[in-house]
Length: 221
Image: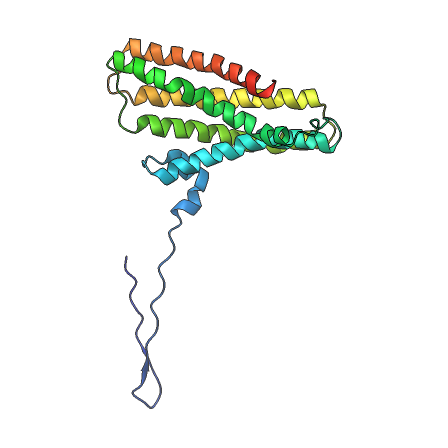
């Protein structure tokens, strides 16, 4: 509703009037009330900025999960630093984001080819929405758990316990994000037959095995 200006004020004993400024409209509190994270999660717009925001959240959350607990262990002397290799120290926080990116994007083209052979076509832009939400959910869960792991590492937790919990967090958050990705992909199919649903679920099992492989190659080697 458009705000109306209040009536002018007349000075006593004169015909001079002072106009009063119109009140400024109330700011839109839609984004502030729901929060940026909620807006990125529920937004259905095929906007490049929305996709970039989700991917940045995912990258930042996984980088923190892979970097902060080991850094805390080094600060308290529970984990020895690498043998003077600066590149290895810089690469360590990026291992989990790279593993997550390779796990999902490496296997996705094969799934789309198999779906086309079964005449299963997802709705336009549905795959982009689903994959960006998957990275966003993964990073958001990592954001929530990393501070607790870092605090435990600073208070004297063993390196084995912190590393094991970090991997359990990564696989648990990845399974949660993958389950939602598979559900969104099934819902986006224009023609959903039992064969298509079975193919998508089987592909999800393959992605779980692939994630273990990439973690072993990137984190433990």
